[in-house]
Image: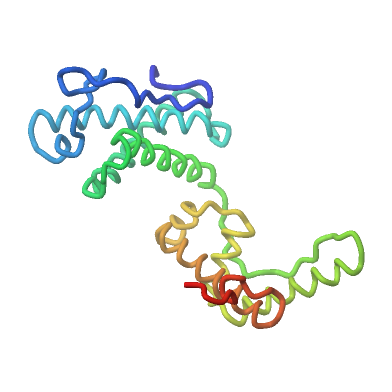
Length: 232
């Protein structure tokens, strides 16, 4: 595939000058949003150019992560890149109205493809692995001396107690899966039938609740922002 990059440099050419025809050197639309939103020949052309751009970005990302694939062959990389490009293009078109022009459209589009390619690689990597939604278990890490070990045990016990006191069972299991077991958030979202945004919100709530409880029990200091006088 001619668009694949065999190294880790980003294969983009976003700073090339525009042609007098109002399109870039490869025929990209001068106004991507208008071209993609208006039915007709210009839209068809823009859709083809956008898909080519998505494939290019996705192929680069999949190639970088190919060691995680069960089949890292060029054909498998190409197939996965095209699949990721299709998904990324659908996501972008659904958010086309949110483009504010703060960066080049092609730069914005690349982010969709790169993110989706990474999601697809992780999904394949985890497709035959069981995600165990377990509760927290107490583990005592090794330390230099008995004093440090005692402090670690005390803090670990406090965290477990706080998790039992202020978190729901769902919050505990999500926290363990994401923060301890290292399950990718998109994989966990797929297994639970939810969204990345919902899981990010859960983790945020977990951190807020645990910090408040550990501060209240004296195991963490009060954040400076909450004690500073005159803070707006």
